[in-house]
Image 1 (cartoon, rainbow, N blue to C red):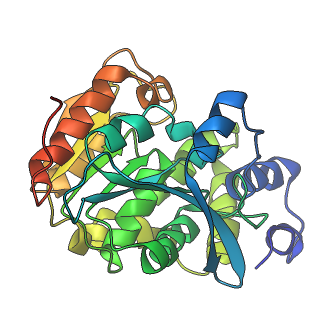
Image 2 (spheres, rainbow, N blue to C red):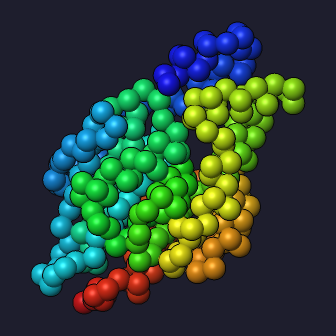
Length: 283
């Protein structure tokens, strides 16, 4: 269902609810910076068929001659794009990983006007069928949640890394409602219209529903003072995930965590420990 259908069908929505819904399912696109353009030009560009449209994807070969090299999929967050993994692609390929990034539906160079975490999770499935299988996955923010959805719906990896991600779509809707300043009596309407768009209850992203996919080692990194996505989201995920390790990433906020050299190094080392065949360290 198109975003305009959701907003316009049925009783007229108060402007505040319509605005909040639009922001939640219709991501803004941002132009490539020159450094991001150079990153993507250094990879192999591909187009992936997905639900009657196309996703933009790029791949890189790892600096390693032995076969088969472990392969890692990177999943960006809301209103982000594949090129924002610029700190990660060189570090991973230098460590011997083959790397794949893609623009989620309605993001970057991929088709579409609306998106959501479930749609991004389904897109991961299309990328995995076209370019996988993948040994590892890394997700930031909504990309982390999309990966959780993909894990619960058949994507198998040996290990994954999650940066500042949510663990409940119901709670994210509540955060959105509060951030938009919606009064209490209008918040159920936002959820009802979003679920009409989604075609299923928001509880589809509850941890109890995602638990079947939480069966591999995971590293969770999150700033306890993150102002955009509460640290409690990663705490809840860690409690539900027996093989997950939660590491506070103090002082990095919600976006700087994606560029921090220590975070990248820790994540790469974690994936190296769980790669088979083993990936040699630097030197």
